[in-house]
Image (cartoon, rainbow, N blue to C red):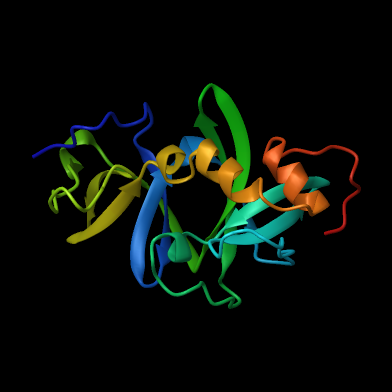
Length: 183
């Protein structure tokens, strides 16, 4: 069975690991991969928002997908990195960072190598999964990162605090010029 969800126009995906499982996102949404350096915790945010990172003077929210998916928090090692992605939600672009245990490779998957996400019943939503890619006899979970990190969810999660950085996140989750690079 082939994926019924529309796959992006590119058939190239960046693969990365979370808690031992391999995931993939469209390479078209990846803007950068950086070492997991200083992440500033923002008070009042959910545990899956690890904080913010200064990316060349811009405040970039950093999401721990492992926590968002109900797994233990990502442990920082020398291979841990932040994948900087551009989200496209509600005709808006947002820059966010996603923590990964390790980035693996860029792979190319054709339509016949992508199967639809399995149905687990009505109580389990797999809306954030584009499909299951097959590579070297193993499945790779292909994520719809726009759906995983919807802007309304991010804004709702960050709008409750009084902290200046929380205000910056709520105003656009993103690019704040003239903060001065502090990397």
